[in-house]
Image (tube, rainbow, N blue to C red; front, top):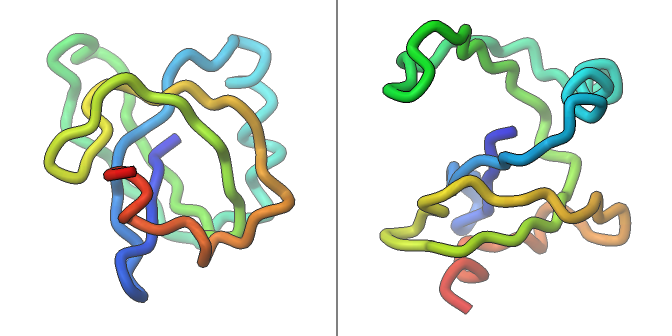
Amino acid sequence: MILGLYDGSKLRVVGHTSGLKVAEKRRLPGELAPYESGERGSAEPSRWAADRDLEWIALRPELVVEVSCDHVSSGRIRHGAKLLRWRTDRDPAECLFGQLEG
C-alpha cells in the first residue's frame, strides 16, 4: 500500500508498506474495493523485481493505518513501513506530514 500524509490540504505520498502476509495480500483487495476512487495506473518496474506488475488503484483517503519504519529522510519513508494496525479511531485529516519529523 502506498502511504500518504496531509501537508496543508494536499495529500503527499510518503512511502509504502511492506511485510504483509500472503493471507493479508489476498484479503485486502476485497476489503479495500469499497474505497476505490476509480483512478488506476502503473508504476515503473522495480530494479529488484522487474517482472512484477506494479498496477496501483487509488483509494479515497478515508482509512488510517499505523505503521512503523526505521528510516525517514527528505520527507519520505526510505524503507518499506510495516503495517501495525488499522486506526478506526483516527480521522485521516489528523494525519499530518509533520508527524514524519517527530
